[in-house]
Amino acid sequence: MFIAELDEKRDRLRQATDTMATALMEIEADPNRALLEEVPLSGHTAASWAEARAALGRLWMWFTHLQDTLARVDEVRGRRWKLDRTRSQELEGLLVGPSIELSIDEVPPSRLDDVGAGAASVRYTAAELLDVMSATLEQVRGVLHGVGAAWSGLLPRIDGLQSAIGGIEAVAESLGDSDRADIESLCGRVRELATSLLGDPLVVQEQDVDDVESAIQAVRDDYERVAALRNRVDDELNRTRAVLNAVEASVTECSEAQTEARLKIVRAELPSPPHSDRSLTRQLNQITDLVARGQWRNVARDMANLQVRAQTLLTEARRIADESRVPIRARNELRGRLDAYRAKAQQIGRLEDTDATRAYDRAHRVLYTAPTDLVTASELVERYQDIVGPSARPREVPR
Image 1: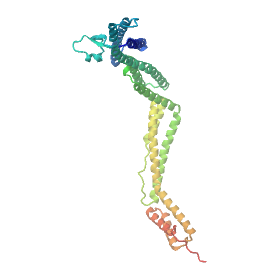
Image 2: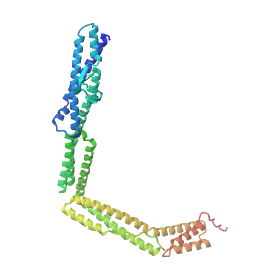
Image 3: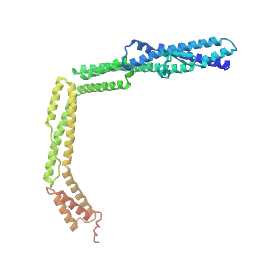
Image 4: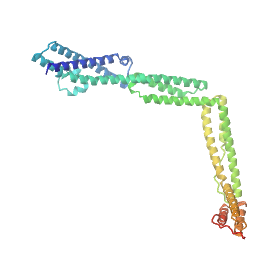
């Protein structure tokens, strides 16, 4: 190999060694590495850091071998402009041959399976050792990066969670709420998360913090909803009373509509009548008592339940009341159609026609006699429509 080629390989080896030195110093200066040495670790992080720390120790040993090899290269190369055959071969062996000998203890764990049985050492080229060092360096960096990302990204959020719980406690205090099991549960979850994050940061996921944040938000919303209800409780009580009164009114309307239908319509098809739930009024009175005693969370819970039940009952009562009016509406619609067809008869000059008059009188008699048979009335109106409808020919008026 020409001396220029050997010099080029030496320069590349020196550059790679310098780059590795810079990387190792950056790891040594990493603040997370120092914290990992001080903080009591546990679980996955403890195991990962123990492995990474051992790997870092091997990196420095391998780096020493690289430096020794480079020093020997410089010694053999010297400042000579020409090398004899012996020196040239030795220099080539140092730069591209398996010139670096590692003891079994220095061999990376991932390469131990390649070591022959009974071997006391393994030889590597400088390029092979650099490849091993690069892979090991990434392993150590991965642990430091994972820990650093967890600590820098999640610890401030833990502080935020603790502050948020403090805000919830302040609202609970203003409500005079003594039962704070939900807040205590949140405090326990945050403490557990903080402990895990400090001692075993590699197992804490961002989703874990997201879940606790969501739980805190739900509890905060609940307390704020209760506080808002306290400020407008009189309006809510009045609104609920109005709904209960509307239920009673709808039940009464339904009863009146069904009574009218039974009296005025033959075999009127009616839904089962609604009922008023007296327990709702009792529950409203109980809520009023809770308000007087300042038990605001119970007020909010019971008020929401009562309003849902009352609104459901009101919707159902109104639906039944509307369905109960269907028979009378059907009769009134037939009356309207009969009047419209009579006006049509007048337009085409058949108002006095014998058949039309007879058909009209029969339909009118049935529709205005109680109880009305809707089936018969509908048939008679349709018969009158056939006589005076669009297909009927206008009567010729004598000149």
